Length: 497
Image (tube, rainbow, N blue to C red; front, side):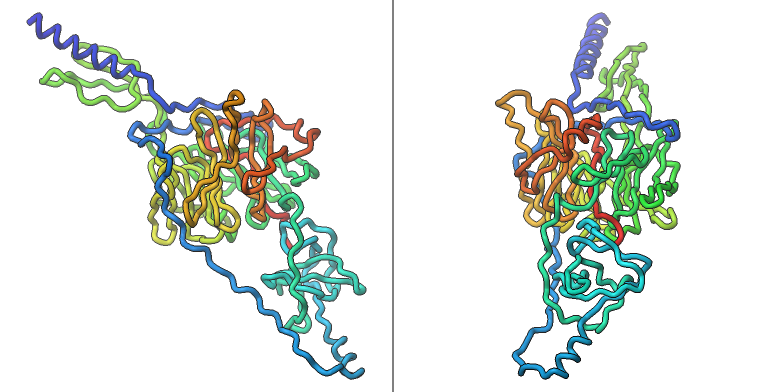
């Protein structure tokens, strides 16, 4: 009898020692900036720790390439053929047929280049007519002139202008360089706090509202964000930049995050907490007849004996689901999701695809078929953001004990590390939360390389990294990054044509 008691005691002691072993990959709990008085204060829980079953990171992650990008045939403009010198009468008739654009809308922006990523430099009033002197490669923008002098570019959409004659025979004009990426930014110095509208050069700063993960719509007119109330029950909101008004879209969800716009701006995909354990759970296992206990679950802790029972606790382990929401009506549909589905990004070129983060690497969801499959198998990949042309995905990558920004080529899977931190020179610095410029030539991000977190920008190949804003503007922000897939930068177009 005494030998049996000693044997049981040895078994119990072995289980306790094994159960108390330290667990890896435990995320810290970030502090969330309090919202202003008229906005519900948001509390925040960290991402669920990585399950122990996840394989170790590999040097060359498995990659499922995206389909080839669609090619757009260039617009074939009429070619000139030698003709006899025109007579005076013919010249007069040709002058009468010089193409013009007459403004149909109340007012139309004149821009410095062919696209909303270029700044507005003036306006044309309804009924005003201007001469068309050029057309861009896609045929969507006219270069226009007044009194023989070019004044800029306007939309060629028949919604905005009437073109006479209907067939335009003008030179094709190359687009000028976009100044500093163009467009405008919505920035949030810390998740859960205030977010601001600002131009890439640091001008035009103004506070808009507060919440979590603000995201500019494709037309640059609306911001989608989330906000949490008591018990971390939250909702998705829309902010109209032109009017400064907010609209509640959909509520009654636990911890909604990361709204991502569809390419046409009609739909959002979000991540929200759904299932799993929201609280600490206490459990007890009975000693089995063979003198052993059932296998303990991962991350069990605080072991205690109660007679022939081994009792322990399990930490919170929330699961995350993707949900699609109609922007006009608020109608929603839950999407096929991995157990932990975070930070979705909608492919602007292949509208059927959403790429999102998970505990086992990046996944890609086929919205048409309702299935998802791996894009990468490196669980260090976080917060994917697809480039405007769909050719690359920028990510925050957990590199050992710090964060780096990488891009992954969507056709080949080749990875490019854009922010080497040179650890031999001291403690490695962090770089994270990338956001593409509207023209895809630059990437904004946050970094602590100057001893504090700041907004920076670099070329899409990682060259020329530098502060995004002038020093006097940057000094107004207390930037913090907590590594919970938060979106701190959304870079979009300037708004309507």
